[in-house]
Length: 331
Image (cartoon, rainbow, N blue to C red):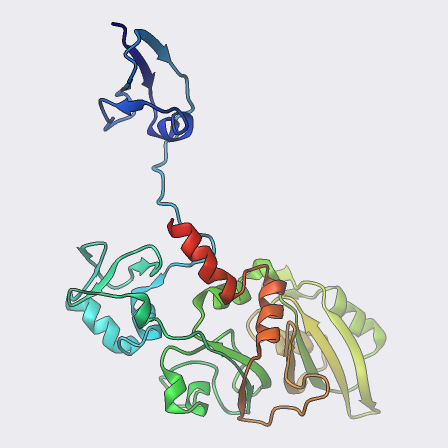
């Protein structure tokens, strides 16, 4: 009777090199890099084979589906309607929240699709997850683009009915004096993609400037202006209306969003902003073709074609496709 053994020096190699070899099973599992793994073939033929493999010095992270994102637990509990953000923080601080069997502290992140999250011993299931909501709001002046303002100013969340406020957050910001298109959602993955600089989603603005900037100034703006030690990315800009000696209306399209960028650049160029109004976020327009413009302070739900167009421009899958991918991923 002969025994065939295979010596490997990496658990990673076990998964990659032996997955398709039937009849091979481990006798010993390594706890360190230096410990070999011995595998015995079920036919018991005598043969030894040392397979050289590349060792990874980093521990292998758990496999996660690329569509889903980790988020802070207090945010997840709020989005899923378990508790308000502040109440969720209290639950975590009191040790009443566990992830994968371990009690967690504030700051911990989790993925509800791959992690087991429990509150008071009760696991969160898909039945707790609220339906994804996508809203377009016409932000009026004097309202701040946040969920809570320590100064007591009115927030965009207060413009929504109470039934829609749980778990909803604004995507990006418009400063308090600016008006126009603002997206609100409870979709954390979409928020991540929209706000990540890598995706460069174009945002369109109509801006009234004091004075009449010459073409040379407008071209400097288009090419990029030094701001905070580095130039702004190229912008698309065109004049829509000019009142000689008084002011100029320009349309500006940006693919980046630094803090108060348009106002600061206009100030540096010597033509400060009088009014700033955002008309579109990617394919989402405040006034779609053949439809009336959304009134100030009002909101509407995005239709399926707008959501799909937004996902397509971001290069991510729509929520309908995500469900089927999740089922496939779990098999």
